[in-house]
Structure formats: structure tokens, C-alpha cells
Image (cartoon, rainbow, N blue to C red; front, side, top):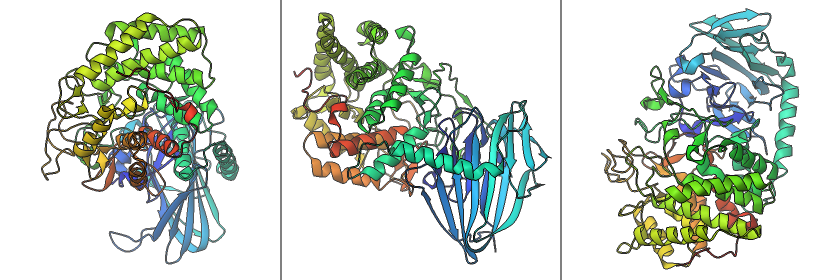
Length: 625
């Protein structure tokens, strides 16, 4: 059975990633890309769906004691160290995926004796096709080769594994000073054996350590929250698909937002809604090359007709992300369906046009390439938005209910025109007067139809009395100045009516849970068209940190930020949401859309590199009505 979501560590090679449990089991691994089929899928089922465990041998009874477990990342790296202290000795397992040389992905596990002698066991069960396809396994020289269809996985180790019960297993002893390597490599099944061997394990470890420590040393932020920021930056780098610069939202699919419910989505794709805050986080911490690669990915991906811009894409810019269900998988803790692909790709979200233009202009401000082709792209997007900004859409949260005039979508349409005007003025090409007119028209409409004067708050959509945390971003993007009383009263309304146990929900959930915890889990909500509820979306709480800071409540912002830091697991990782009912992380993990606003909030609290913000420090809101 899979562990708690916060029990998992991330390792990866910037093209794919694995989740390693506290028990030493690799329960999720997709090869050769983030969005490839999983060969270990126990995370969404059980051991029969594929896993690879290395741990001290079980001893004595159905609930064996394997000793005290501690784990950490080597400083400044994505190299995981898990240590067991048993009655007979201490053993350390080091897990990592070296940055690739060529196309073959490699996962390395090194078992090291620290003290005494420890009996260990290795259990390998490869299942291709998300846990469905049983491979043909044979021994070739000192290798185990598992082959089925287009996939082959090769394991090289000095330990002899025997086949039993549709898996391979071994028992071995490590003593102080012993180092036992395991090297698992994926290859196309037609390509033959890989060149890498278990004898290369230490060289790959040294190379991986050098890569990550060198990369981490480039971080320009050394403030109060430097440890948390660097761990989040390393996580963001790990979620980057190196060949293209695209950044996936998470390396997993279908980890539930509501345990046992249907809110299970595939997040192994790149969302445009993350564009500007991701760019900002990278620029403000000194990672200009990564920011440039992400900006270039963005420009290539949205190339074409503006009407065809999607809300998400594959890691190389793929557009067809058809959603289907892996019906043979029982789901994480019974949460079904298990979805592969994401049908939200076909939704209309008008906010993405503002995100793209905001990212492009922020890049220009930071000195990234902004030539006539980039400017032509911006103009084409604006021409489309000029005709369609007044239409309803599905909004930032990808609701599977009716289209509405979501306030956040309108704000981001305003951002699109505001930023383009700024670029035109900077370039001395003469801003289009029509853009100013549209910008001001959008602003006036939002303030008129998106603001509930009786409740003194901006709402989720026009005519609604419901709240939505996304309106907190209006200060951050410069729509209104922080001192505007409508901003302050909106922040207070969200604190009063959209928080549960000190955390911010995405939007009002009208239902009440069976345990009485309103707004955390319940039956069908009117807005999103889905049954069940969800936990608190962590990005929203980080947005509140920024909003509180901007309106002058610094101490309150710091208190909330430190509360959020305490929700990270022992390795500094955050999933998409936190469910206060159970005191657990929920949703796909680790989640870029949690770690990026963490970085942003920390930098804001420390006033670090404000000139790279989407609205630079000191710049007034472009329109104040």
C-alpha cells in the first residue's frame, strides 16, 4: 500500500522523476519522460502495480520493525539519503538520477554499511503501462532485463536476485564500509543493453553531486528563508524538462485533492497560468538562463493562431493531451478514477493571454530577448483578446461547470493590455490608443460588476456573492494600489470567510461535509460541477502572504508564511493542497504551483530583487479609478 503523500521524496534527472517512500520503495517512475507510462505505479495501487524496494529485512511478525528511519537531501542537491538504525547496525541508502548523457535515463541506489551488520532485502517488480503490462524478464550476464513492447528496463548489481511470485528479490548483508550499487536503466526494447553498469555508480554520484552543488551555488538569494527557497528552486529545476525548458506542474497524476474522491487530475504538463510567477522566481534568484529557457519554451509553444492558445501543453509543446482512465488501477487510497491526460486542455481560459503577455514583457524588462517576432506575437494575442475579453470562460481553476465571467480572468485581460502599453511606450513606438481605451474599459467593468459593495469584496464572477482567492492577485499585478479600501476589505473578507484552520481555500464551496467541516469537503458545488470537496490550495495561502505584506500587515504575513513552511514534509516538499481535517498533504506532489509562490513570498518578505517583480517596486497601478 502507498504511503502518505508527504512520505515521498523526489529524485529526478530533469526529464523524468521518481517518488521514493520513507520505507525505501520507489512507488512511482515514468520513463523516459515525465508524461511517459509508469513502470512503477504502486503509488496509485499497490505492489502488484510495480515498485522497487530496498530496505532492512523484515523481522518478526506481520508489522515488522525495520528500525528508526531518517532521511535528508545532500546539501544543495537532489541526492536522497535514507538511513536506518536497527538493533544490529546502521545502513544508508543513497538514491539519485544523474543528469542524462544521451537519451537513457538511469536510477542509481547505493547501499552503504555505516555501523555493525544489517540484513537487507531488495524487491523489484516492474510493470509497464501504468502497472498493467507484465514484462518478460530474463538474466543476461549479470543483468536482469525486463522487456515488454517498446520498453526495456535493465538492472545491474553485484547482488543476485531470484524470481518468485512475479517479482525478483534478494537478501544480502551489508557491514560497515560496504558499498553495494544498484543501477537501473531504461532503454527502447529494440536498442539492446545499455552501456552503463553498476561499476559506474560512484562516478555518476560524483557527477550528480557536482552538477547540483554547482547549480545551487548560483542562487543570488541568501536571506532569512534561504534554505526553504533553495529547496524549492531545486524542486523547480527538477520539474524542468531540460531539452525544451518546459516546466511540469508536478511529476504525478491522480493524487487526490479529496481522499477517496473524484478530483484526481494529471499534472505532468506545463500550464501557462504559471508563466509569470515562474519567470519572476527564476529572475529574482539569479537563474537567468533557466528563465530564458522557460520564456523561449513559452514563445515557441503558443506560436500559431491566437485562437488556438491552450491553457496547458506537453513538455515539448504537444497540444493533444487526451484524457482517459486507467481502470485497472484502484487509485491512491481508493481515489478513482485514475486519469491519464487532461481534458481541461480544451477549456477556454482568457487569463492565459494576460499571463503570456505579462511573462513576455517581464522578460524584456530583465533583458531577455524581445525582438520584432516577439512583439508581433504580443500584438496578435492582443488583437484576439480585444474581440473576446468580454466573453465568459472556465477560469483559472478549470471548473467543469458552466462558463462564467470570472473576475480573475478579466483582471488578467486588463494585465495584457496594460503590459503591452508599457512595452510600446518603452520602445517609443507609440502605444495604441485603442489599447488604453480597452484597458480602462475592462478596469471600470471589473470594479462595477465584480465588486460586491454590500459585502465590500471582489467576488468570484460577475453577479456572484461567492469568494475566490485568485482576486488576491489584483494587487500583485498592479490592478489596484495596496492602499485602495476595496483591496483591504477584500483581503479581510477572504480572511474571514474563505479560510479554514488558518489556510485559504480556492473558492467558496457551498456544501458542508458529513463531519460538519464546511467548505473543506462536501457534495456537489454549484461552480465547479464536481462532487466532493478539497483541501486548502497552498498557492492561495502564499498569495495571502503577499497581499498582507503589500497592504502593510507584515507581522501577519510572516506568521502565515511560517505556518505554511511548517506544512512541508521533512525534506521541504509541498504537494498541491493541505487537508486540515486529516493534517495531511493532498493532491499531486511535489507541486510547482506551491513551491513557486513560496519562493515569491520569501523574496517579498525580504525585499529581495524587487526590480524583477511583475510590477516593480515603486511603480503605481497603471489605472486607478
